[in-house]
Amino acid sequence: MSYTLQPGQKAISFRLPATDGKEYSLSDFDEYPYLVVFFTCNHCPYVIGSDEVTRATAEKFRDKGVAFAGINSNSEHTYEEDSFPNMVNRMKEHNFPWKYLYDRDQTVVKAYGGLKTPHFFVFNRARELVYTGRGVDSPRDTSRMTVNDLDRALDELTSGRKISVPVTNPIGCNIKWEGRDAKWMPPEACDLV
Image (cartoon, rainbow, N blue to C red; front, side, top):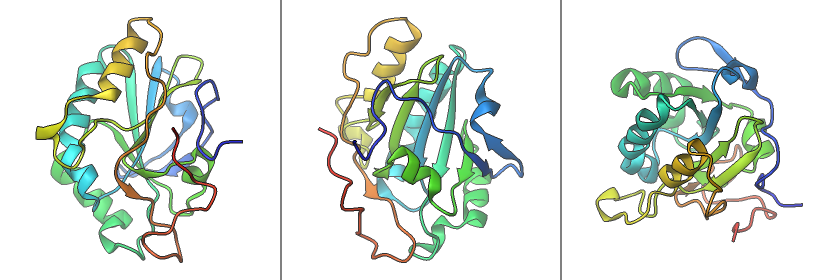
C-alpha cells in the first residue's frame, strides 16, 4: 500500500480548527462539487514563493465549484513561525481564499500521506482523488514555472475531461514532524513516481 493517497481513493475525514475561529470537517465542504486539500505552512520558501499562484488558481475556479482547504501539519517546535497564532496572523495579512486549518497532532497529514509543503490533493464530486502532487513545476520561483499542474487538473476536472496527469511529485520542504529532525521523513514515504 502506498504511503500517499492514490487516485481513486476517497478523501479521509478530518475535523480541525481554522484561523477564522471555527472548526471544519470534510462534510463542511459538501456544498462544493470539487475540493482541493493541500498541505502548506507559514515558513516554507516553496509555499511563500507560490502562494499567489495558488491564490489565482483558487479564485479562477471558485465559480466552478472548487473549494480549497489548506492544512498546516508542521510542528511548531521545529519552526515557531508555523504556530497557530502565526497562522492566524498570516491569514490576516494575506487574506487567502481558502480555509486554513491546523493539524496539530499530525493525524491528518499521516492519513493523507502528505510529503511536502505544498502538496495538493484534488477530489471530484464523489470525493475520490483525481490528482495529487505539485501545484507548479517551480514553486520557489514562479517566474520560472513552465507548468501549472494544479490549474490543468482543475480545468480538466471542471470541464468533465479525464485527468491527463493524475500524479506528480510534490516539490517543497518536507513536513516538519514532531520530535524529529527538520529533514526527517517517514521511511515508507518514497517518491510518488
